[in-house]
Length: 280
Image (cartoon, rainbow, N blue to C red; front, side, top):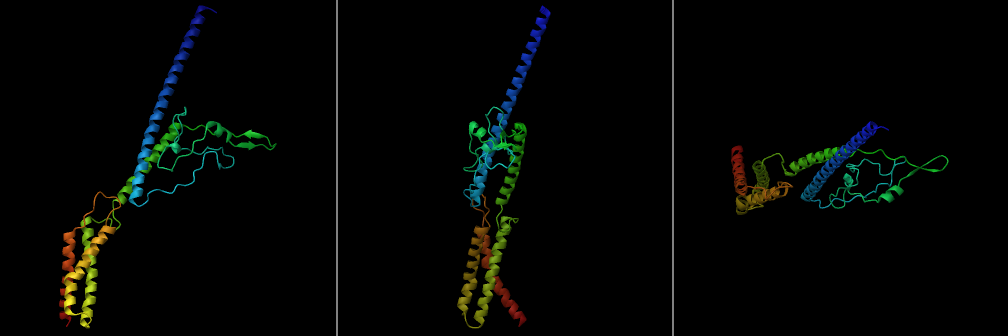
C-alpha cells in the first residue's frame, strides 16, 4: 500500500472520529436538554400538587383517598408486554430521569413502586407457542422521550388551566355568586327584613283577636323583629356569603344591615296601617 493510500485512510479515520465526537456532543447536549425539561416539569408537578392540596383544604378535603397502586408488569392485558402502557415522561436513555409516574407528588398519590431491572426482566411475560415452548414476547417499541415530555407539558398546561378555573370558582360565594358584596348584603338584609315583616303581620293579626297586647306588639315591632332580621342576615352572610378561598373576612356591611332591618319592619307596619285605613 502506497503512502498516499495510508494518508487517505488516516484522513478518513480522522473524519470518522470527528463525526463521532460531534455526534457524542450532540447526544450529550440532547440529554442535558431532556434532563432540564424533566426537572422543570418535575417542579411544576410539585407546585401543582401543593396548590391542589390548598384547594382541597379550602373545600374541606384534607387528603384524597389513596387508590390501589399497580406495579408495572402486573395485570397486563393478554398479548401486551408488561409495563408497555404509555408513561407521561420517559427516561432520557441513561437511566437518569424517571417517567412522570415516578415524579413525587402528594403523599400516596401518583408514584409507582420501583422495580429492579433484573426483576423487571424476569417479570416479562412469555408467549406460548402451539408446541408449548416458551418464546420471549416481543419487546415494546422504543418511546421517544422528547414526545413524551411534550405530552406531559401539554397535560401540565391543561391542569394549570383547570386549576385557574377552580380558583376563580372558589373565590365566589355560594349565595348569589355573580353579585357584588354590597348588592348581596342588601339583598340578604332586605330578605330577612321581609321575613320579619311576615312575622309582624302574624303578630298584628294575633293582637286583633286579643292574643297579644299592645305593649308586646310594639316591643316586637320596634326592637325584637328588627334585631332578629339583622342577626339572621349577619349569620346568612357569614355562612353562605363567604367564598371558599378568600383573604381575610368578607365585608358584611353591619351599619347598612342595621339600618335596613330597623327601618324596614316599622315602615312595613306603618304601610299596613295606612293600607288598612284606606280599605276601611
